[in-house]
Each structure stands twice: as C-alpha cells, then as structure tokens.
Length: 157
Image (cartoon, rainbow, N blue to C red; front, side, top):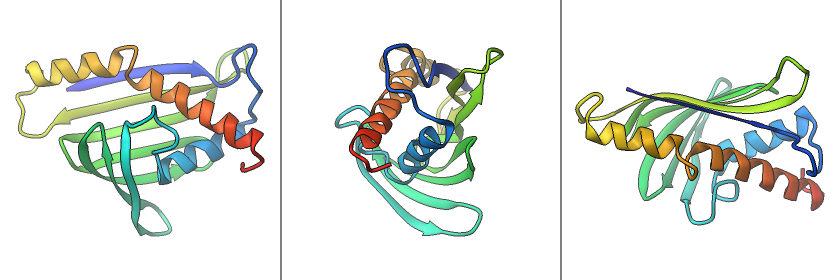
C-alpha cells in the first residue's frame, strides 16, 4: 500500500494571505478542473461527467493516466478523491486545517494501492517515492495555492 502525506502553510511569509474561504474556493475549483491548478502539462483533460447532491464524478488524464474519480466535498474543510477507475485504488484527500498556533495549513494524504500490481512491489515502491518526492504532491499543493492567489488577484475568486 502507498501512504503519503504532505502539509504546507496556506499563508507563508511574503505571500498574499488567503482566507479559509478563498483557499476552499481554490480547492473546490481544482476538484472540478485540475488543469490550471497543477504544474503545467500534468493534467491534460478534466471533465465533470456526473453530479449529485452528495458527490460528483470527474474523468481526467493526469500524468498521462486516465482516471475516473468520485469526489466528495466537506465545505471549508476537505475534498476526497475516491479512485473509481485507473491505475490506483483508494482515496486521496486535500484538507484545510489550523495548526496548534492557529495558522491555516493545507494537507494532502492518500492511502492507495495499484490495481493488478503486487502489494509493496517495485511499482508501488516507485509510486511511493514519486508521491513523496519534490515533484510529488507537495508540489501540487504549492501550485494549487499559487493558482488560487492568481485567481484572487484577477478578481475571479
């Protein structure tokens, strides 16, 4: 199994501060269309194909892989991406929370397996290393916050 986590401050020194509501709007928009929020070229397709009062379904191509995800929103707090189809099974979570000093943080965590691959085998180990590396999910969190700030500056948030 792959378990990965990363946490970044929403408002690091020197950056335009975001409120929880603004950061949440960025997360919700990213859930509906990840393309402008992820590093350039990483997501080439992202379409919401189904909506209900409790969730929506998106189909996306991220890092060259076709995915189908069931997405649930816990307003102002958490987005969960359940991997319905694609190479992975399990869940990916983006969560806003305050740390012990009251500073707003954005955390990613996931618990995943690779369909049709040996548990803890070389493929899962490689995926784990990618998630935990400098270009992994920490980079995705930072690019999400960067794009959210751009939307705020453009008056589109």
